[in-house]
Image (cartoon, rainbow, N blue to C red; front, side):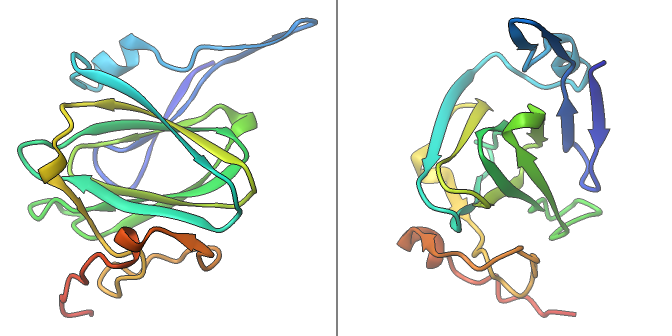
Length: 180
């Protein structure tokens, strides 16, 4: 049975699909329009992206789109395993700067639903890790922003240190907030 698990950041969920198995293999419905509609997600402008990551320890993120170009993302690991991180970057939210992390494994077929205004990133826990993104919203190059992966104002507890990271992701500015 398909289940939707709420995360500790408003508007973010883990979608656990129903897996049907028989002698031929598996059949999994990755997205259900009724679930997305119940969550009041606008899926009128949706595109699909794939990220391949050759080495364990590859870190991507933490990325988000500035207003008014926020995106809803549905992210799943289709090969391997990663530690997926969401950071609430909505200043008026009760969970502003709170983060949650979850392991995504290809064999679970689970997806994370990332609300608009949430920064997203991950580190791969296996070689040859592949992630797929269903993104709702219009991409705007100028609205692309990020939070540094090791910013002390957020203090994400990554399961390992990155061995591969883009120069852009490594050089996002620190938030320079007072850490409590």
